[in-house]
Length: 366
Image 1: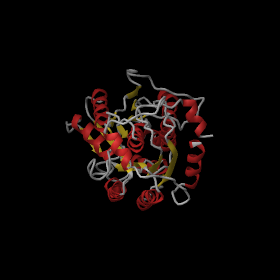
Image 2 (image 1 turned 60 degrees about the vertical axis):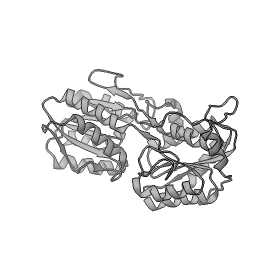
Image 3 (image 1 turned 120 degrees about the horizontal axis):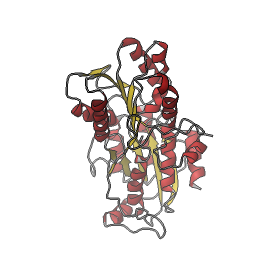
Image 4 (image 1 turned 90 degrees about the vertical axis):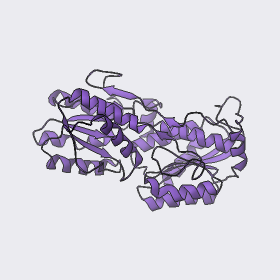
């Protein structure tokens, strides 16, 4: 059913080979705005009108996106009115990501959920989809623009709060100051900028020095590029006290470079991942500076975005929540709210903070 359709879509990694069957979403929008009606036995956000829903990534090439895509699929499967759920991967190419949106719109999708990795460069394509009558819900990365003008709604996450949490942890654990290296995704992405705003609002004393490229080292959330960036930073800076990163698992491949140079792995303030947690459990006994704190990596941000898209496309009840709030997850120092969580019986590329069961995540990687 939906599972087979999305598997096919992922295999082709684009919309050109997808046959979409859709209908106008205008009536669904009107019903949703009036409060909506739900399907018996389904969530309130699932209305009675049939719809084709598409998920588009700007970059789908890591395990986080795989789990997130599956989480989006799982959320869609709660609504029988969604007759098809499709996927396209921009592969880190802004022009391809734009073309993917245009292709889904031209093929007749009723609603699209978009991870606009390239930020404001995606706004014209989003606006065009919205003006064509397609329910358009960008999420997680802010593309600029305005709800109800350029798209239906942007479903963001409170990344400023993540940054504040990291800043407070750094302040508590490094009261005398620290050299801080910050790694984020594509240049200009709102997630990194918001996180920087958050921890910088806490770390106002000049004894906290931000090293590396500003406002952050660009990694595109790509593990291979992250390893290149971090390896170069290790060679360049004799003292790195804290690494802040919004995709913690991507650091694991490069962190042993500290040991090779006779240095302890430094403290990390980042997002969770099984590979990172198990790496910490293995390496921390021999690396006295290797403290770790994580926030939930946020795979479930897509669930709220899907709910908004489906509600508008099917005439369901629009959720009242518009911002995804990721909780703090691990702290190796005081164990609050959790000690570092490692499932060494499962693959590293899973996220124990996610709603999806860990074993189900592991099955995706087989």
